[in-house]
Amino acid sequence: MIKTFRYRSAGCAIAFGVAVALSGAAASADLQTVVGARVVVPNEPVSSCGAKAKTALNSVLQNAIESEDGSGEWLAYGALDSAGHASAAASIHCYPVDTGYVVTFACAAQVPPNPDTATGLCAKLVAAFPGAKAAARDSSSAVGRLP
Image 1 (cartoon, rainbow, N blue to C red):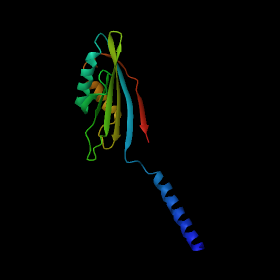
Image 2 (image 1 turned 120 degrees about the vertical axis):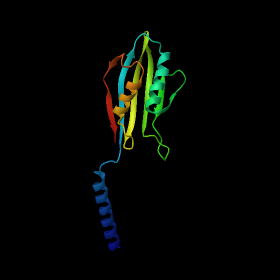
Image 3 (image 1 turned 45 degrees about the horizontal axis):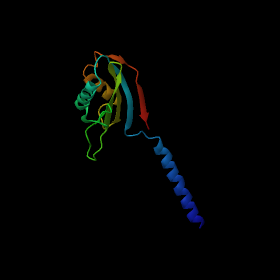
Image 4 (image 1 turned 180 degrees about the vertical axis):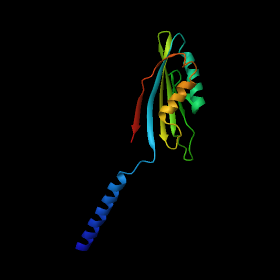
């Protein structure tokens, strides 16, 4: 009985030591999320935003869709891996304001395997959004990392 207790105690101590040692190991991937630029497009109907959002998303990712007809929220995902999972995703939201509209960008990426960071992905989307360079930009962004 005493030998069994000693072996169990030693086994638990070893398991605890291994767990503590491995908890400080670096993670193999980093999940990044970013709220990208906000673009204001004056004197243009919000209906044109959907076509531009779809074009931008399809040029950077693939298979852009509107989450619900007329919602103004467009989504796209990166290429699928062998398990059927995407390591990148992005959304573009279109909101009517006065005689124009506001566009917001949000991106997520798991690095690796995705070659682009979430910030890089959003920068590519803004560059691919037709007319974004001519529109006024709010360069504020928020970056978040999930453990």
